Amino acid sequence: MTRVVGIDLGTTYCAVAVADRSGSPSIVRNREGENITPSVVMFQGDTVVVGSQAKRSAATAPDHVVQFVKRYMGETDPVYRSESGTPYRPEEISALLLKRLKEDAELVLGEPVEQAVITVPAYFDDARRRATLDAGRLAGLEVLRIVNEPTAAALAYGLGRSAGDGPDDGEDGAPIGTVLVYDLGGGTFDVTVMRVEDGDYTVVATDGDRNLGGFDWDGALMNHLNSAFMAAGGQDLNEDSGLQAELRDKAEIAKRTLSTAAQTIVVLSAGGRHEQIPLSREEFEEITAELLDRTRIITEGVLEEAGLGWADVDRLLLVGGSTRMPMVKELLRRLSGAEPERGIAQDEVVALGAALVALDAAVRAEEAQDKRKYVGSGASVDSAPGDGLARLTQGRVKSIRDVTSQSLGMVAVHEEDHTLEYNAVIIPHNTPVPAKKSDTFHTLSDRQSRLRVRVTEGDDEDLAYVKTVGEGVIEIPRYPKGAPFEVFYSYDVDGIIHVEVKDGTTGRWLGEFELERPDNLDPAELAELGDRVARIPTL
Ligand code: AMP
Image (cartoon, rainbow, N blue to C red; front, side, top):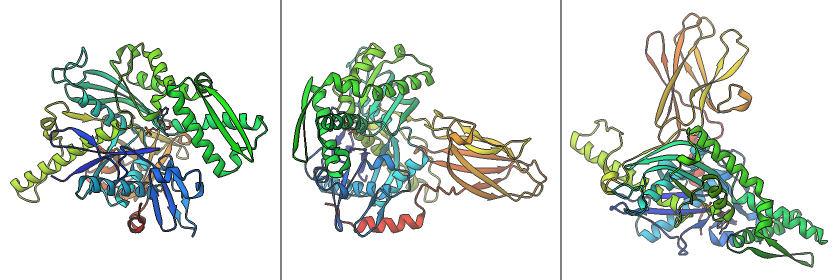
């Protein structure tokens, strides 16, 4: 069986893990011996430096350092331009991170690492999932699955519990009940409600904000510190990129200090002026109260979607480095009246869960191969979950079922007024995946020869409030106006969309659409950038 690694590709840190054949996952350290690698890339001429070394340079060489790239995944604008003017897209920067993680894992495991499972925030949309897949490909990895971070976290957590840990644990030690995963990382916020019952992990509802994380707490603190520095007669630190990067560093350190200490002092220096700015946890919590409240609103919304109240939550799981801030625990304690789970390695739990999914993928690939050998090549191999993982984990993980985080629809034309377009939802959000649903649309003119499908993401009927993911055109037989065509949308387990069309008159399948995704790389770009990434040495 080949080794498949699980990778948590985070906004601020990444982690890699593998699971052994007994189903127990462990972190694979990087070449510096660290459990997590900062998601920071520094360009140095033709080479790039990745990780801690690059992070340390963020203040001294800010113009050559790229960080927080996860925030831009699924967008087309370059996030960096080299000195010679070469633009780098978010996928490429992520690929450089992944390449380094792959090389480190190979070094530590002593064998080639070619396949991986990569995690993404649950609410990542199609373009961002696709961009993550592409980043893996650019790094020379075969990405077997894209997994939602809270699902991975719950898996690792569920598996990590030993028998009899809690009053409502199953005989085999798996936690039973409704689990709320509150994941506040460096750049993103994700909340998921999940049912865990006898080894079956079923996501009920999920939502998040891709632009809410520790980064924003740092930003609020930076503003506060900068104002204090200016009020004392200092210059505006935001006007110089080096000083700003230094301010960000200091703000982050102060934030971390305040997770354990009640106060701290931040020393700021610029233009020959030195200021000592005292800061208490209380002040910090006041400055960032609005950010915390945004997480509350999203969390309560998810519970409502799940049709549950706080009293129904059996376990609260805190994931992501930013949940170390005492204000997070206090908020959840106050809302739920319960104590969040302790003893969870916030930075590692997602990668550990990904390693379990990776093991599952490897076991399935092996089983499929055995089956192929058995029934002869060319036979179809069913993709239903195998029992390999259940066996390896002694029944503690039997199935993993996720839901769609975005509603998927199609731009439809109003039956009476053809100038009116609206969004017709085909797969509502929080539908279990894999999902396949259809809707019937009618041709608008006699002898219409083509059908255009524009795929949307979002709930609103008004097209102004939804995103167009991609579109495709398919040739159709010419019929009188009003001929029915059934458009099928499916969401695979990775959360990637496929579209097929059936002729409603004859019942014949017209085929699958190749969606043009304007936000993602096309095959030619993928090949070109893959070569480029392969040529760049990562230190
Ligand atoms: P993650 O993306 O889950 O690795 O989370 C990284 C985020 O957690 C960054 O914004 C860190 O500043 C933040 N973080 C890490 N440790 C602490 C801590 N002790 N207190 C507050 N925030 C922390």
